[in-house]
Image 1 (cartoon, rainbow, N blue to C red):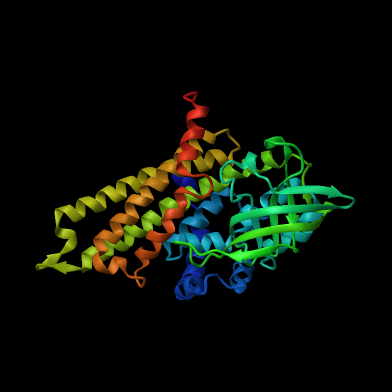
Image 2: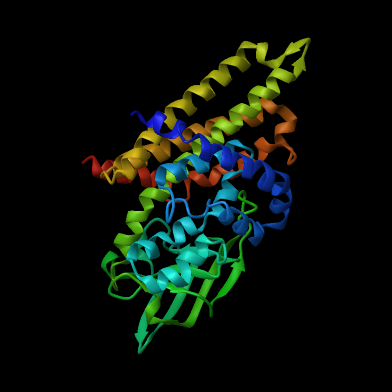
Length: 371
């Protein structure tokens, strides 16, 4: 069965997600953008119909792909996904550790919509270079004492717990661990170009005492845990990119069919119809490839290079599509009341988050023996 069939057959899930998005997200999204965050009640509502459990106690990566596609293509946004499904990057390390205590205290409450989790890896001086993080955790009896800072932390303002990358050993990747921090740190809200409904924070740890039982996995084994989950995060961002591009195309096609200039619809002008065709071509190529790679990730194959290609290709398609969408909407495309304006802003982070496009290219080059 080809990848397309694996995704298209999930009709019931698509219908469920589309209905949820139409009723619970779309009518409120503009207000959440102004508020700077989504309400906790949305987590509870999503959990009640099983959406937060997808990829954990229910469903798998392929279901997560469908979930992401449908939220965006039903009128949601990548910003909503970042805020509502932050547990998708905060919880996997805990879930896979098999530590029942951590799973009961953090993972399951997040899946039930009772707690909000964040993942804190990036630092002011260490973004994609995870091996260079400097936030330290020193063992002191039954606790670790944590000092340092994290930045660009999604849901960091609302988080009840933060799965935090800390240095428990020497320099380099071998000295990194993951520690769940619940309180004792300070937060500063950050303002962003896009993803306005997804709160983002800078976190400061000043002699924060964290119980040693909050260690995720083995000490100094955090780098491998982080890298393993990066593949899922990156393929998910590729999905967000091509889904956003498709939504931008759908909105634009409707607009140019209904908008008349000089006596005929815009779509009847060759320069416009050709632009739509190019958008569709780039989107379909990115979607087809990314879905195929998602299937291979799901199967546990070593596809690090292909994940890099998928993310970059989808981001490129998205950048082209949202720019064309705003242009073809004309002045309305520049207005906040226009959905394509939101997608234009939100899309910019997709080539930065989860590993910048340049980092993806460098990683692929190394894997291919070119660098």
